[in-house]
Length: 381
Ligand code: UD1
Image (tube, rainbow, N blue to C red; front, side, top):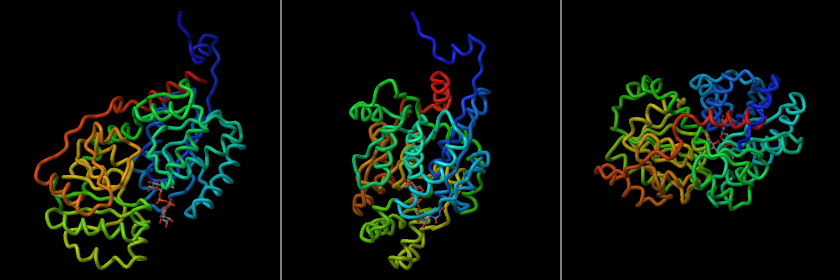
């Protein structure tokens, strides 16, 4: 006895139904997650994807550069919401996205990750009775002071299909009582992008432009409100960088939020005093990937970078007290160092002394997550 999915039933009765799907992006970490899904959908004649960009991130270097690098088509619809407080930004996305859903009448809305746009579009779709798929579901830091944790909880509670990247996601959704049938362990679309663009990223000229060689530098990213909106924590991190840069060059492409806070807190002089620290504008996907591939180690508070370094086998020190991506610590090259100046210095020195944490690639991080996602969707519709 076996069961045929609805896709087969349609095939058997010779009926071809176009599935209209809105793919939502809003902020920088969304673009590399939606790119493989868009690419996979383009290979399926029964799927009509509509790409909606909320405009949560709008600077050329935070958005357009990624569309170019990731070979994403121009968004079909741009909502132009921009920056604001959480309530205002979320509300603006909701007002604009409601019009889109009413006009387009999609069969499904796909949201990725955990940014404000992810949650806002989920609420709208849910209230209009449109099915939602959440890609990167089930991750939990168990820290509700993180805006992303609230976004993850709300989005997962409203989603009809939950696509999971790691075992902890399955465990968390089970504990929250989400029905098994909605949950699919598919791997990680962000790793699909990394694999797809590895060779292209290797050809980037960024290292020679910066005058650095492979393994001769540490790469830093920093933008969490808990680190950069709090002067005491920001200074603790800069104090660690000031010691590390005596031993190795530090490349620091800076997020606009952190750049703004450096000026507000009057930290410019402290940064200028570090002669081995290279502060620069945010980088595009390919240049940043090139620097990650060849870094001696990475210091970050990003979510996705913990995962990319695990895949690449590059040591990663995460400047946070917790992670919603525990597989990167359990199996990967990631260590949590919080904002503890001494611990950051100590762990960096360990890496420089050659004591690297060896890691493994987590299950299903194989470049085929988008294929699995589209297969599930075709089966359901
Ligand atoms: C957002 C996400 C975060 C993600 C990060 C990646 C939420 C709650 N947070 O944080 O999860 O890790 O993106 O970058 O959704 N700004 C610009 N230009 C831009 C975008 C922002 O200058 O194109 C500045 C504005 O001053 C803005 C600030 O950055 O107020 C913060 O932007 P926002 O989108 O609110 O949050 P992020 O810190 O970027």
